[in-house]
Amino acid sequence: MSWPQLLFLSLLAPAVPSSAVPTALPAPQQEALSYLLQFGYLQKPLEKLTDDFQDHEVQEALRVFQAASELPVTGALDEVTLEHMRMPRCGIEDPFNQKTLRYLLLGRWRKKNLTYRIYSYTADMSASEVRTAIRSAFKYWSDVSPLAFREISYGRADIRIHFHRRGFGCSRPFDGPGKVLAHADIPEEGAVHFDEDEFWTEGSYRGVNLRIIAAHEIGHALGLGHSHYASALMAPFYAGYKPNFRLHFDDITGIQKLYGKKILPTEAEEIPTEPPTTQPVPAGPTSKVPNPCIDDLDAIILGPYDKTYAFKGDYVWTVTDFGINPLMQIRSLWKGLPGNLDAAVYSPRTKKTYFFKGDKVWRYTDFKLNYGYPKLLTRVPPNLNAAFYWPVNQKIFLFKGDGYWQWDELAWTDFSSYPKRISSLFTGVPSGLDAALTWKNGKTYFFKGDNYWRVNKQLRTERGYPLSKSERWMQCQNID
Image (cartoon, helix red, strand yellow):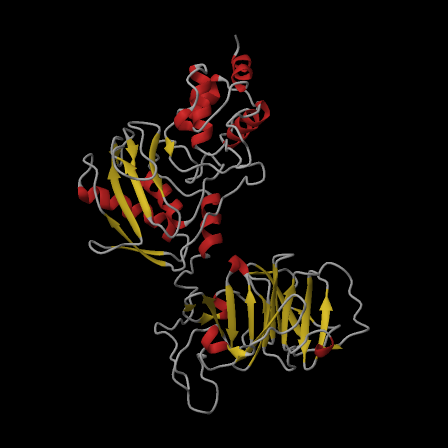
């Protein structure tokens, strides 16, 4: 009987979680179903009353596995597919589907300076060899991102490294030599575990290379899922020792999507090393470095990488749930963009960011200036006050004085009936705004001085506003 025929017969039998796959199935089918369940290719829907899988479900799971493994996509369990399932690999599931044939993002840390600690070591290598391999593994990621890693020898670290055998009490027990080599938790859990039943080495084709496997698991600990590219570090399978191993473009793109690109020393601008002061500055000209706790905003956007960027003068900073990150000069992120902006807006519809100053507009994709920009503003007035993207109608609103314009990026917009009065559409929103944005919760925020107003989808200011920008957004205290 052929493998496809055996598979078809096995599909008629019930399939259950990998720990209890029916032993009545032929051994190859039992092994394959256990694998597909263990690594996320088959999942029992919550609404199903039985553990049965339909033939098309298993065939689709096999097709996805074969596509992700760069095998002929047949949906049939042949010997090549089964042998690929037996390759040594990471213990994390493969949440592949036909639409995610690129890097996967599973979470991220809310800081870029992380600590790590090695709590236990393998008997296969000296402690110094292990530390060197782990340090080299972290360096793959710090070389291409703004992340920095520091080893500590006591106290709780952000990323915690252990070697242990299958009897160790972790959530995903190991399976002995071969098969699963290591696993890790996504941010901000921080656990990285290596199977001590493997033979760990460095600089040798024998055994399992600790540096490469550690770099892979650290990728998970930083928020990356598995890549479908077989040559990527984040591919689920261990491809063996490579003396001159380099990150794949999919690895680099993924980590930079989470944390941004690395700013080289020659590109870095003056970045204050001290946090912004919360004390008032004397009256007079605005200081060279703005004080987010006191100064008004030039603009604010929910921009690239889902980060909130605030602008003032020549500087920009990101606003997080824990306050603000250090200030940096605008041109260190958006090259060619001037300071002292009038307004800015990021469009999720086109992934473009628009910056307005005087009678010009600059357009960027992520942090790269688009060809032909800056351009002159010819159909709306210069010196705008604010702008925001409204997802309800996918339009960009532009504001100046007590008027506003609605603009469609992808279609001709008739501005003959504009400007319209802000009060004719927005209830409780003042004129002469400093900045505006629509945030992650779907609410729109307007800023003027230290006040901000939150507006619902009916474009009405919510009860209790305005509130203090410095206290609620910048999380400044005692600034009076």
